[in-house]
Image 1 (tube, each protein chain N blue to C red):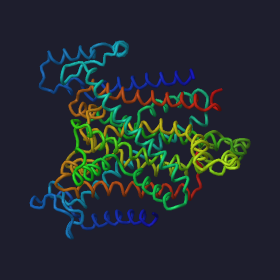
Image 2 (cartoon, rainbow over the protein chains, first blue to last red):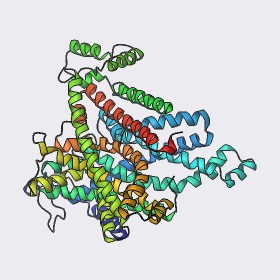
Image 3 (cartoon, rainbow over the protein chains, first blue to last red):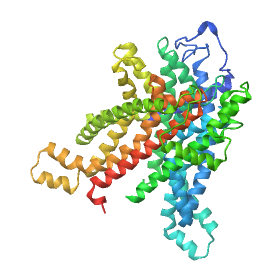
Image 4 (cartoon, rainbow over the protein chains, first blue to last red):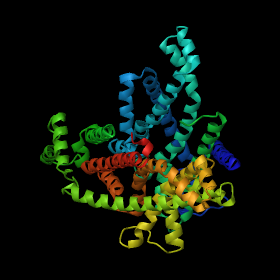
Length: 262
Length: 301
């Protein structure tokens, strides 16, 4: 398992470096090689426009990770902010925030993202907005639960008894204690976001045609499932391999830091 | 119990507010987005008054609640027909699909989980755990095409997509079920392993009960109740997975209706679909909570 996960990460990292060094443009079309099967020149074959699937996948991953980076940044910062405040201050604020998170959680899976992707015109920025709208909830819930745990611990109480201010307690004691569970949460969230982003593009709500997107490639490939199954299998297996590797990395960090589930 | 009911009602009202706001969050004039720039001014005004967009927002919310209370979901812009019959059809199809998937997942999930826990550490356990790990990480949009390739194209056993043949439900149901199945296997196995060395099991064994009776009557009954809550929560992934699965298999359910309505910019239909999907998720979660309290005597007070 461990070797497979490392091999997958290394493969895609080297692919990225190779793509940058060779400067290959993944949008070059060669009409005579439409849907060519994998061979030695084109490792993963060609797609329905005669573009190299391998380089297009690398481009798809670059786009996907750009979006995911922004979404993770926005949703983790806002989620942690809301969660820590709600857990630390408590009272009415906590009740209100708890109700709002329950409300957001009543939309199953990517439905909220679908709803917002539907009203915003498709594009990178709007995709980021649509995914961030539901993304903060997970971080907020975890940050709140962890804050409640840390708040009661002796070192926090000791510093409070020595007269540290609220902001000092939050920034110097609570946030550092939160960092490891949050990084693990973010790792799992990234794996989920790869699938969410690909699902939105698969439904035609994500990145649009000329741009390389994993979900868009998957949708195109399903159209040619009968004639050239290699296209769908390669794209699907690539997405899955990345999700698997990231989830494995999350499990590894989870064990490494000895984080307890609550 | 009352608090639970109140939360659920508040949640459904919140869902209603968010879906209601969808129409108002469209950048620019929603009427122009729906009808196109070239539509006549008279048509635009007609649609505006039909949708009630010419009234104040509070008035619109009250009107819309009144309409919904009468079971009126509005009119589709595309077909100019009431949405309700279309929606009921789609609901029937989605619920059939989701229930079949849930049945498959629960049945085989329990069997797999019990087997894996019973023979934990053995070859069977490793086999079941690895296969379920594979199905947990496979996304619906890949599993669907993969099943089509295997079952329809290579083996020629089942129809690729559509709803004509009565066997057409098998592939989409499997696509939805396999991921859930893997989760249920994992949960059942882990919770069974937690109580395998507990006093209950030791007492049962000391009484001289057979292995089958211990596994089913003592261990499985204990883990069943917490599992129900987990399965209820997983129902959400079933519903959001249905959007992708129905699109792949051309299954005329809520998910497909939602995607088509987004593509054709038929916003009243989009609103109705999102409202129904999210509300049924809340409803199922409410039912599982009630079932949990009812089934577990420790939770009743």
